[in-house]
Amino acid sequence: MHFITTDLSLARKLDAQDELAGFREAFVIQDQNLIYLDGNSLGRLPRKAISTLQDGIERQWGERLIRAWNEGWIDAPRLLGAKIASLIGASDDEVLVTDATSINLFKLAVAALRRHPERRTLVSDVFNFPSDLYIFQGILDLLGERYRLELIPSRDGLTIDPQDLAQALNEDVALLSLSHVAFKSAFLYDMQAVTALAHQVGALVLWDLSHSAGVVPMDLDGWGVDLAVGCTYKYLNGGPGSPAFLFVKRQLREQLIPPLWGWFAAQSPFDFDLQFTPAPSISRFRVGTLPVLSMLALGPALDLVGEAGVDRLREKSVAQTEYLIYLAQQWLVPLGFSLGSPFQAGQRGSHVSLRHPEGYRICRALIESLPPAPVVIPDFRTPDNIRLGVAPLYTTFVEIHRALARLRVIVAEKLYEGYPHERLAVT
Ligand SMILES: *Cc1c(COP(=O)(O)O)cnc(C)c1O
Image 1 (tube, rainbow, N blue to C red):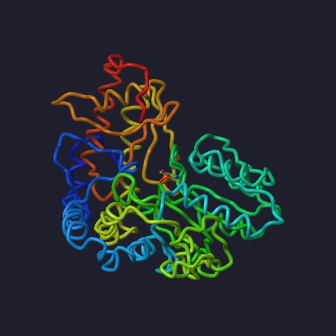
Image 2 (cartoon, protein in one colour; image 1 turned 90 degrees about the vertical axis):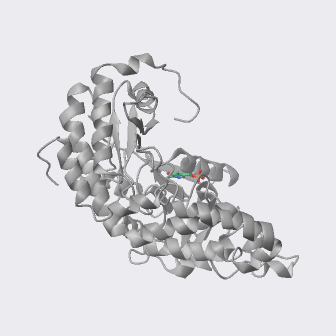
Image 3 (cartoon, helix red, strand yellow; image 1 turned 135 degrees about the vertical axis):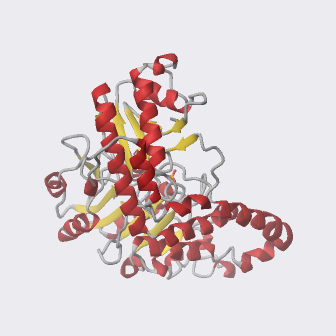
C-alpha cells in the first residue's frame, strides 16, 4: 500500500472502508482513551467469553458438577482443536488443545528426536523465543548431551537469510524447530519453503505458531508440516493462561511416542489399566486434567477468528502494519527511531518493533500518560524494542495514528525523562 498523507482523515477513511470493523464490537472495550497495541501478547476479552464462563461456573460447575465431564468437558480439547485446525490448514483430528506451549514443545520435540535416534542435531535460530530454546537445552540435558543444538544466526538482526538456513541443514539433523513469526523482530518465515528444505535432508519440522496463529494464513496439511505448537492467548484471544495447542501430522501420529505418559494419553483412561497403552488418536499427546474454565473461554474467541477469516485478517494486518511503518518513517525516524522489523510485508508478522535507545522509558511514558493524552499500551523487548502489536480483529487505523502521534510527542518533548530506568517485573 502507498500512503500519501499523515493526516488523521486518511486513518478515518481507512477505518470507514474496513469490512472487518464490526468485529471490534465483539470485544470489551470500555476506555476509548486506551489504545491497546499488545494483542500479540494478551488478546482482548471477547464479550461472549463472559457469559460462556458464567455458564461454566454457575451451571456446569455449580449445578452439573462431575456430570459435566460427560456433557462436554471431556471432549473440549478435541473440539477446540478442530476449531484451531480450520485456522491453520489442518484436519480436525490433527490438533489438540492442551497444556502450555512450552510443555507441548517438550512433548513433540522429544518424540521427534526419538523418531530418528541415529541423528544428533536439533536446529533452531537466534530469533526463537527463549522458552523454546530453554526447553531444547533441557531436553539435551535430560538425554545426556547426546544431541547438540545449533542456532541459525542472523546477519542483520531482523531476518534469517535462506542461505544460512540451508547451511544448517544436513543428514545429521533430526529436527528443525522455529517460530513462524519471531517474537522480537516479527520476521516471518516462508513455512512452505523451509519445511520442504528440511524434508530434503530427512529432518522433521516443528513450528511454533504462537505469534502467527489467527493472523497469518497457513496450510499445514498442504505444506506437509510434521508438527506444530502454539499458544491461544495472543491473537486467538483465549485469555490469560488459556491452554495451548499442538498439531501432529496424521501419518506421523502412531510413529511418535510421547515422553509424558499421563492417564489422559492412554487408550482408555477409565479402564484404569496398570500398564500404559498410548491412545491411537492425537489424545496420546494429552497428559492430565486440564483447566476446564480456561478452556471454555476459548470457544467464543476462536469462533470470532473463524468468522472474520484468517485471509481477511492478514490483509488488514498488512495494511495496518504498513500504515504504522509509514507514520514511523514520517514522524519518528527523524527523532532517532529505527525500524526493528522487516520492511517487506511478506517477511513480517502482525507486530512492528520500533527501536530507540530510550525504548524502555518511552514505553513507560506511553503506558502511564494522563488524560487527555491517550494511554498507549505496547510492550518492551530488550534491549531497545518498542513492540506495537496490531490485532486486526479490533485495532483501528485511527488508534495507530493516535499512538504514533503520542510517541512523537513523548520523544520530541522528552517526556520519558520523567520515568525511571529500572524495569518492572513484566515488561
Ligand atoms: C508466547 C510464546 C510462548 C508461550 O509459552 P507458554 O508456555 O504458553 O508460556 C512460547 N513460544 C513462543 C514462540 C511464544 O511466542
